[in-house]
Image 1 (cartoon, each protein chain N blue to C red):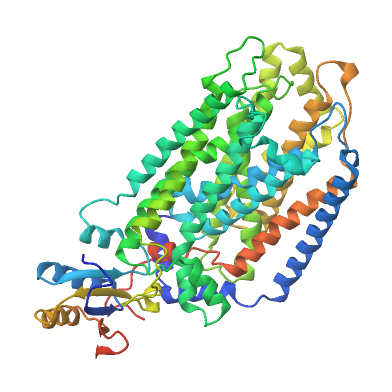
Image 2 (image 1 turned 30 degrees about the vertical axis):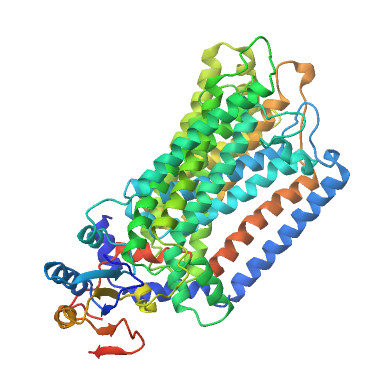
Length: 449
Length: 182
């Protein structure tokens, strides 16, 4: 569908109706919303209790031991950072590329980015065990003149993740200001209106404000675009800078970025499909938008599939017996189930989107997106755990399995992410009012009201 | 464009985009000054009609990004010189890994400077909200054109707004009551 086709379809609605429909999402929640929120609270409670138990007991409460020192926490960290890629991709890169289909979905995707990165940021702290010493990694003046080692990819990671979170948050908030103003002007007098007035910074949509806002938005997008690429590249270097077989490869940065976009797009589909139904936004978030997401998912899945294949080829072609051993071990060894679940969910299942019928089916889109979410978590587990479990010397090999504490923290992270997302849907507009209006025909004399 | 809060004049409220454009064009062709325009959504066409120069936000963005780049390299280089840890005879300052630090701070400072720029140049936070001329419907589906005028050209300003089919015309010196209700 072209830009003009979409504009024509949106032209059936008035600007006032767009306001009303989007702001209706902020009304009193229904039973489905409340039930899902309660479930999220339970998961967060399970996660919180598990973390408290971990802190009290020590890292012995996890399955981590020699040789597998990085397990579910680092896996889940990389998973959530990946989920956080779709929002900025959709809001920044597709904005610069003038992709019209981003308009209706980018706000919710941006919110998911913020919450995913905030969730991811907790996992290095959880993995640290003694979380109260986390500030050691920050570059601050101290009595011993001891500074972090800026040659370490772990320090790069701290810089990359905090920068990404900060820039995404700024981009998200600045984009929200005109919509908060619209919500403020429709709100009844009371606490909500006062908070919205404060958050809208006195936005009036006058010439001076729009002039600098629109200019700044382009710069935010231009700054965020290389940042999206860099963040998961830096995360991949946590692994690629080491000499561990299966990790030490130059393909890791593009491979991780493609995987991050794949998982992020899948997660956006996973929550966007119920969102448009529960909040009755089908006329704004159309099947067309979901189809475009499905095409992006298919495209990134093909890149990821290529990366899986080329890894095997390079292991064989390198003549390095350690590389060959690990890439033989992954599909045939102790974690073969994880490997094949990863390949099935991330490579074979998305192929269904080559068929238009599948891209048109809401249920197919929803199920595939969930399977890809599973697949991407398996991918990170496969990369991290199998390589450490099967390093150079056979006497150093060992196995890792997750304990109940780790499962609790994993489920808790999902509860935390969806709790934040659900709260956002009820507090601030989850579709950009101003940008949807921009993409619609402007009200003109002679239009039917 | 004159200073908003000290200006008197007439505010035309428009239901239609083309009516607003007509009012702006007519005001530009006469000697009536446009004090402000209110839009529910960003519109480059209107901005191009009013402003001949690009927004200065870009200068602050550039300055922020350059400051970030220099700060990133300085932080990495100077702290490695302070903590002088020689490993395997390798140089203490090593520019290649420090590119990551420089890059991240370039983006971070660039974004922070852009935020500061949009706040300063956009007059945000606007503490006197809602201002003299603002109407809540300007964030919904109507447009506002505020013409700055004196007693001498008030009739001309009113005629410009009326001829462009303004739904309401308000006297900004007394914003509570519409001067003309059509």
